[in-house]
Amino acid sequence: MSHELIAVIMFSTMMLMLMTGQRVFGAIGFVGAASALLLWGGRGGVDISFAAAVKVMSWYPLLTLPMFIFMGYVLSESRIADDLYKMFHAWMGPVRGGLAIGTIGLMVLISAMNGLSVAGMAIGATIALPELLRRNYDKRMVTGVIQAGSSLGILVPPSVVLVLYALIARQPVGQLWLAGIFPGLMMAALFIIYIAVRCRIQPELGPALSEEERRIPFAEKMRLLRAGLLPLVIFAAMMVPFVRGWTSLVESSAIGAMTAFAAAVLKGRMTRAVFETSVRQTLAISCMFMWIILAAIGFGAVFDGLGAVRAIDNLFTERLDLSPWTILILMQLSFIAMGTFLDDTAMLVIVAPLYVPLVQSLGFDLIWYGVLYTITTQIAYMTPPFGYNLFLMRAMAPPEIRLRDIYASIVPFVGVMVLGLALVMRFPEIALWLPGRVYGE
Image: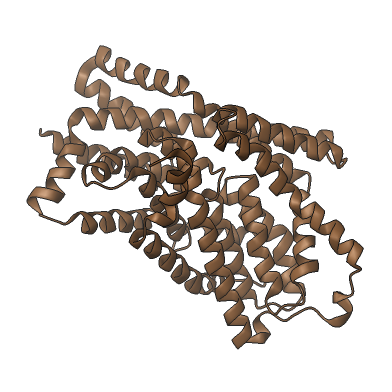
């Protein structure tokens, strides 16, 4: 049996197991371990698994994952996100579509606090959605706003997914984070422009606050502004020392976690329940990521040992004679297809061992490709019929918002995200200028 056929069987078996509802790390790990044992026997198969475990445990930046996850849950469970939305309500309410625009701003700040898209979705659906509906915002408009805004969670630093990509692609985490800042802010700006123009043309979609609701004392507005700036202070306390070279990545993540904890304590919101929930959720998600990474590295080692990466490279570049840009676009389309039934982490660990060497051999920058990956997977999250975000929204939305409304709501925002993806592909400097400026060309 040829190595190419073995690789196809491995990949097909893994996808079949995932489609039957098996856990991601179980499917990937089982196929990788079983293939290693069948191909190289007991000693060789065990060596591959052991080497994968050692690689995971010796990767120092992996310690940042629990720190960032803990920081995000502390800020979420202590209701600091509530203060953010009150700030946007006070300052943006008088503008048509202002609360929807403020929700995008809320999502940007939540992204800077957490790094997980599901956190932005949960906060937006529980805090912003009821308020927007109560103020007669169009239900399709607001569900699209929350889904689109939550997509910024894995693009704006500290992105947990970019940390995982850095591990698999062997790229510096700091450069990846900096590369995600401008594309993330650009995407948020495109969302805001769309909302502002749409609500200008159709005011009934996002009515401004009434005169009575606008009567908020200036002192109260300034108090809310100070509360809303707290996440930016936490973000600066974490990122500035790291970018300036004063601290390592792990030390900066610890600073972020401690600053968030101190903020919750000083505001009198660090109760026993908040602390216990934050620690439990941090442990659960961190362990999940560790198992997925361990399984993915073992699976990738078997694939690499078979020469599957070189075979795919030869297929695209020599047999089919495709141009590098055509191959890149096909890879992005495959992410969108897989995103209809897999989350971003699963997609990354399944195909990154194949795609990253291929992208490098085609002459593309791996930092830039990491940003393309994050944007593409979030487009996939919002693409029917089985987009991950669609079902998260359906689970959190009130009964009056039907699945049909959720499907219709994302169409214009997907279009905006495709435009943003095209801009980053056409102008790589959007992603690469800032890390090049900070770290040198």
